[in-house]
Image 1 (cartoon, protein in one colour):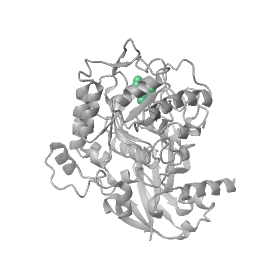
Image 2: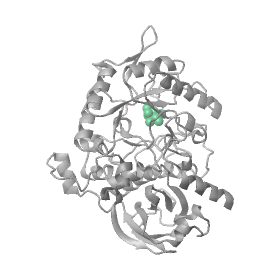
Image 3: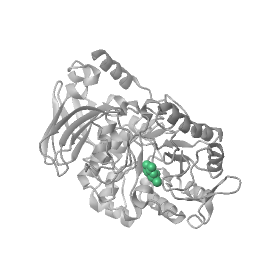
Image 4: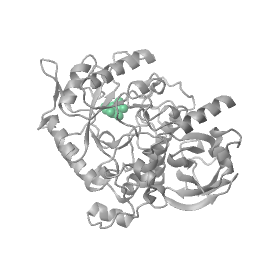
Length: 474
Ligand code: GAL
């Protein structure tokens, strides 16, 4: 047991920034963008995509890194007599190549959606059996990203071999086009993609669909994560905590170029409070899930903007080491909300420059003091507090302390902001990797204290709140 822990530690610590399983050169850090599904479902059209893209750019979200504008289900109108996919010309009057051209000219990349089955989940035509033809069509439209869903797969699931071959067929077809197309698998964790999808896709969904709740259970999402890998029905209506608790068992299988996808963000959709959205966003960044905004950007409010643009948290997501934070402990607590069991957790993981991320998560129902010892934070580096890092002292950087204030955020939304250099990191100009190498202070949060060798961090956390901290050797 100890031996395997040490081995895990070695893999985690010495991992290089190069992609280990390069199906292409994309997603060396988790993809960032916007997808229409969570806020708009099937109500899609050209104007929604293009007007959203304009706002994503205007609010500074493109330049902090949200580069992909992804169209989800319900865009097509079947096939022509030669089997070529047709777009719905009422929803997309100028066709898909036009959308791609407009998005490219605005500095974005264009994401498309199809399904590894006979139909999509919305019951539009799927790509099963048409992989080569559809990949060529997507390439001819200058598509940069494909989300590939799992509905109506004609029973071609149930073993990793069957499912992986079905998804690999499209991966090969995309590569054969010669165009760099990020491949985002969406098979909801069926047949355990974290065991095999690193050689198939750039990311894979690991659970049923998210919905906009922090922790409400729903019978349509029957697996909780407590049963580990054994989930025969991924379902949908999965809360943020439900998905996080499932991911905890296998999130270490993510690696540069190939990531566990915890599903699109719900930040800003109204079903969680500000602390809950901060927690949701922080944990998705900490475990290196792709970050696809899922809110209506035209209706964006100040709190949503200051979460989605927080440079110190985005620098965790886009960290060049590319090593997901790991859950070091989880305890149940008695103060539950209406939905049953409360819990507290501590996650940690390596960051660029020998720094260490710590997330203290209070999923209980009341404010509490929480602490994390260096021995636990570095547990996998040498069990029972034997790691050399435990005997160092560390500066503590709070990654939420410099969050943009509401007045500034309102100015951004009203287009009256003047100086935003204290809040925005322009990743279009300088990558997060280069910014971190240059010690750009925007990416480091606020220095709030120190922890002495052998010590522990203590912090007070609101209900459903998080402390996201960056430790740096003193
Ligand atoms: C689901 C998928 C969602 C969305 C939806 C569209 O299977 O997980 O993210 O794409 O289909 O119908």
